[in-house]
Image (cartoon, rainbow, N blue to C red):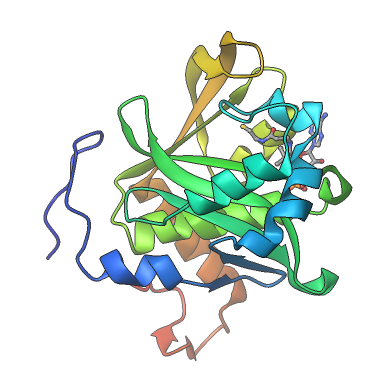
Length: 223
Ligand SMILES: CC(C)(COP(=O)(O)OP(=O)(O)OC[C@H]1O[C@@H](n2cnc3c(N)ncnc32)[C@H](O)[C@@H]1OP(=O)(O)O)[C@@H](O)C(=O)NCCC(=O)NCCS
């Protein structure tokens, strides 16, 4: 039985994740999520050097150079408290398309962040990557909840959070490197019990009417 964890408290993450997360490769139906490599720096910089991305993130420099990308990649050591993965599209020959992360913010143990390059907007990649990291947070990192936030003007990001099951938790102010100050943000939260319900519904929607899915009886939760 895992030790109960309180939101916002510094915690010892589960021991088995300490080593595994570093080399973890997550595969979804269309994406691979893994630690970015130095080879990704030129394409990462080309996609990230976009005002529409920088103005919607808290700490993205603009303009964004290959040196910025190398510095980012060299500092993305994945730990159980900070996960930063590159997003790679299987159907585009494994091309780097963006990043997705989990890290502490505003007293929250995990806040999710993501961006995808402009050529890939509207593909559903951001939602697919975010859903995979939400599952990681609850499945492997024993998160009690996951937070999310976006600028009040960022309807696409708001929609991504909604499609992941996040619920509106009020407005606030968040930091913006681009605007050199604070900007109004909408806050969202996904609590573990809600995620468990959503996962049960997802499993039920693909389960046969009788029998089992991967050995799990239909309509019964995996835990
Ligand atoms: C936010 C972002 C990651 C979304 O990427 P994406 O690939 O378009 O995301 P998805 O395709 O998974 O989903 C986008 C959803 O937003 C909707 N959407 C897009 N623009 C919209 C707008 N202006 N108003 C309302 N909804 C919008 C899409 O229709 C889609 O919803 P649907 O599937 O119900 O149709 C991408 O725009 C981005 O990287 N923006 C810059 C960085 C950023 O804002 N990161 C998030 C910081 S909080």
